[in-house]
Amino acid sequence: MESPAGARHADYADGLESFAKYRHILSRSAKCTGSYGMASALKDITRTLGIVTLLAAGFTWFGVYGTGGPVWLRFAMWFVTMMVGAISSFWIVPFVFHRHLKTAHPAIRILAASILLAVPVTLTLEVFLFLIGANAALPYLPIQFAYVWAVCLVMTIGGFLMDRARRLAELEDAEPEDRVAGFLQRLPVKYRGADLWAISSEDHYLRVHTDRGEEMILMRLADAIRELGEDNGLQTHRSWWVSHQGVSDARRANGKLVLVLKSGREVPVSRTYQPDVRAAGLA
View 1 (cartoon, rainbow, N blue to C red):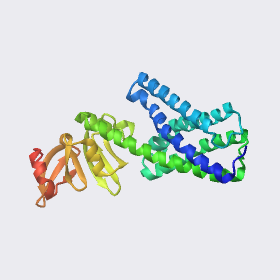
View 2: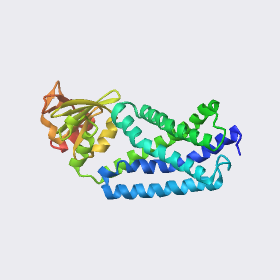
View 3: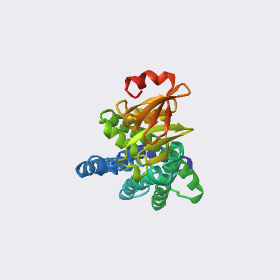
View 4: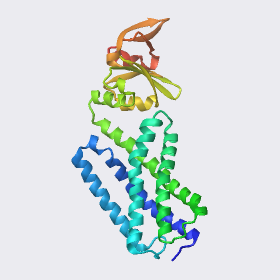
C-alpha cells in the first residue's frame, strides 16, 4: 500500500532520527584500531551491528512507509540504508575533516560532510522505496534529499562536538609531552616529533613555531593553550604563547620586555603576563 507523499516524508524524517543515533557510534569504530586496538574495534563493530539489526527490526515491525512490501524487503531496506550511511562516514568524514578541507572553518567542513553523507543514504532509500512500491517518484527526490541532509547535518554537528569533547577529556589526563605530540598532529607530517617553540595568533589562524620551521593552522589561540596545558608553556601576550624549551634569551627593547626564541624571533611580553613570565624563570 502506497503512502501519500506528505505522510511518506514525515515517516522518513522520524525514521532517520533513529538512524542518526547509531551512525556516530559506528563512525567511531573506524578510529578504534589506532585508539583502542583491534579487539576493541571488533567489539564496537559487533555492538553496532546489533543496534542496527534491532532498529531495522523495529522499523519493519511498525511498517514505516506502509506495509505493502514483504517483511524481508522492508527489513533489508532499513538495515542496508543505515549501514550505507555508517560505512560512508568511514571515508567521507576523514576525507573532509582531515584531508581536503583540513584547514577550512569547522562550519564549512561540517556542511560539506553532511551533504556528501546525504547522497548515498538518499539514493539507497529511493531504490528500496521503489522496490516496495512506496511512490519513490523522481520529482520527490529533492524533498527526500532535504530530509536526509537535515538529519545528517544535525548528527555531523553532534559528532564533531562529541569528538572535540572526547579529545579535550583525554588531554586532561595526558602527560605534558603527550599534549605537545597531540597538538603537532594538526600539522603536516614533517612536523611530527618536532620541538614546539611558540604559537602566535594572526587573524583566525595560528602560526606554529618549531625547530623544523613554521606552519599556519586554523585554530583559536585560546583553544591551543587549553589543549597544550599549563605545564608546557605560558601566554606572554594576547597573541602569543611560548614553550619553556623554546626560549633562549630575554631582554628589553625600547623599555619593553621581550623573549627571544631559539630561532631568533622576538616575542612580546605584555604587562599583564610579566609576573607569570618571571615566575617561570624566563626573564
